[in-house]
Length: 282
Ligand SMILES: [Ca+2]
Ligand SMILES: [Ca+2]
Image (cartoon, rainbow, N blue to C red; front, side, top):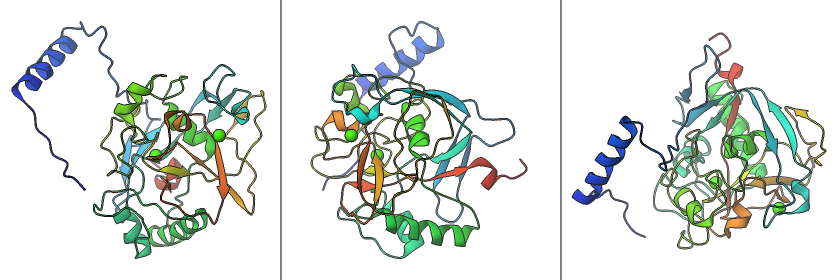
């Protein structure tokens, strides 16, 4: 265990002033501005916090992206292709992985393996356990929260990028965005401590893998609209890689399947909800 604290030296302050100055004067060539909010659809708030659990959501715009990885991507599996255009309706997705405190609020227990901070992501929960969580949460809130579909998950993870990771193709850069085998110290970390992707979503790569709502779909090269894989009674998908995995397993396009009953300290989840399900008449 260790403590998280902020310490800014005067040298760091100088760097911060310099960066601000460069941005203000429009001379920021070479400095990547990472947070770029998508344009929310008219009338819907760009973010939303669930009152009961405190779970924060971000509105993602409707749009098209290329799902899957090209044959040339290092470390890929055959089921990531062919790449194909996917068009999605706008939806809300949780900004962070669901935490142990949020799970406990809904279910009343904390089954996680790693404990110590309420902001740690919940893990050691099966896909079936998440369905029970959703049943209780939706009963309490009267809303229709769900797991993201695989297409929604990859759209949110890529946040407009086509590279192996949302931050490019370099494992060293991934270090700033994700907890994975190189930097995790063999455990999970409180959500939101690494850099967010361009749409302001945290830990899509690494920390805990994330359960997916729909079943496995064989990719075809044709265009898809709001695709949903057919459910299997036995198996479920999970995405994103985790604290234990090497970088190549944390890639945006990597697909992984396991039994729905499987529970481990490597898998947690985040939530999605259709925008009309929260705001019927914005
Ligand atoms: Ca994750
Ligand atoms: Ca795979």
